[in-house]
Length: 484
Image (cartoon, rainbow, N blue to C red):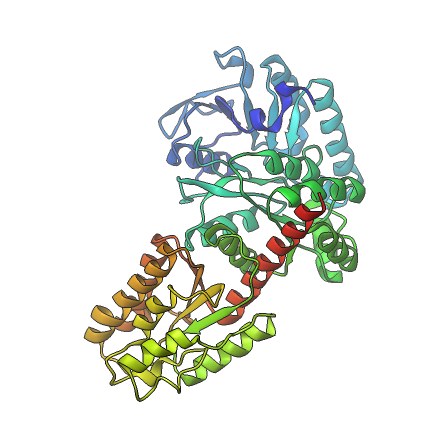
């Protein structure tokens, strides 16, 4: 592909035209206009509608060809499918290089007429030298440039890039991962993939210097061999995480009607991803957990874990979960026990890994002090800190002592270079629960920990599974590097 057509240039437009811009609030043309205005798009924004004179304070042109610029980089089509072929003629006259088809009801309908129209659109675009993103997609979220496909997404950039066949899934991923401290280079929703597809997007993100972790939601691929050839070098460069949609028979049928994708055998997918070092997850929550792990934790190949915090039951369950994911919980060192003996002689030979915080109630040593001590230990690879709600402490002690000390302790461990994983379970919190001082304190502590750049997980299970996949990946990368 010539450099002028590289995805990097296509995804970085200086000018955008929205075809079918509308004053109707629920229309796609209105929504995309607001997305770009509210996210502060840094280029020139043009609105096109044959009947409207002004929308959201911007002048509206009756036709793309009447825009004064000699060329427009990027066109967002929000018009009916039967009007797209005519639009492409105008795009050719304006030297448009990328058309994003929010326009839908094409091949995904399964109907012969609409399938042929999608094919005709692609054929005409190729003759005119125009690339197609979609159809049936939300397009590009590029926070550095101010491009967005939804409301209220972060404006700050970060190291995670992604390509998603589902527009709603892409927006949900960005929104919920952002709550965990994740930020993004670009996220692309590519829909039916009539032209720009998963192979080209994988190649793009693998070579993009601003992307350190690649996340994806894929319903199907057009060419399994090409995808495998793209996956192998990509996973050797950076983590590639794949959520495969359409694993069940019902899901596979939905994939065909959603983005006209052939889902393929899940066994083949699992074998392919395992062979080439990519990480497969089962749902959007796992995808977010995995991105949090790769973004906020360093490369880890060791499997020795120390768990601290929580009462006896919580500690026991945490130990079971981490061991079941293949981690070791080593004994506390003699040096550590010597420190314990000096401070709490009645407990020094009783404490084990995992460390039951309830043992230290009424003593001069709290579990939070223990976590800071642990940061100087060499006998483990990962510290897991549980912030538990199973204690009977009143609000003033919890808010003014326990929560701040937990935050300071985990931040101190991170500063000393030790990987630390925070598990904070918030349960099913509704408006009534948020009136409670304790739930508010937990939410505030969680926010502060996220702001410190620490990895926070909602349960021991989600934490252990995500960290296990992270360790597996970096161990695989290490073995691959040794073979080179």
